[in-house]
Image (cartoon, rainbow, N blue to C red):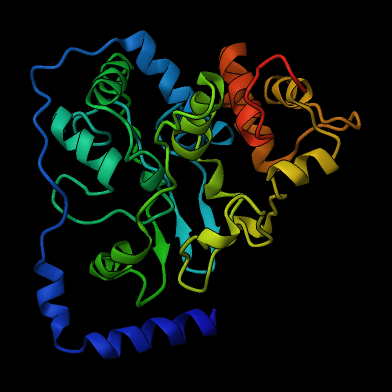
Length: 300
């Protein structure tokens, strides 16, 4: 923590008096999705794939789903996922679809303040206007719940959100989800899910002292997850060495069962329970094919 604080203060010292300008510097581009109609069924599927239910729900609290998740404890402080039901004050009921689009794809709140990267917006930047409209339609169909999620507990100076504007300039770009014309449709679908919506790299990638993902370590695992957790490497060679095949990995994403018969625990167990187990077999196999770098869905 001391190393992180020292680094942050060094950056702040370089910024100097520019901090006042930084605080009022606007970020985020405008959207215009007001006329776009969404499909709530497809939106609900995307929400599952994106981990929205797992992150924004806390079964142990006794509160309904999507009313706020359990605290995410990091070296920077404790982050609490908010209520995202359509309640006008406790949730996102006062938002417009354009507010929602900017929050999800750009990590910017309706009032213009940046979100902390505990919200993996960098991985959602590839979502299309239709994807956003579908997600919005799904959340609008959820019952509004007057439950106020807990507040973040973040130490100074990390509680000064305007500093995130500098952080975003360096670390806010997510991994590519663009279609590779030389690869199969299955592999490309898996890439879209793994590198984007399912945001596997958020946990399975090591980070530096400022919390930025290290691109050269993408999917190579992390020993410094919230609450002291660890995520194993999931690059093709690592997965093969661990005994995974396309079939067994697709099954693992549904059941939580690993090749040795053990089951996923901790955060990955929740990812399966609330997310990947709800996906289609086709999408689970696509994710497995991409992670194992296989083009043909029927080959292990």
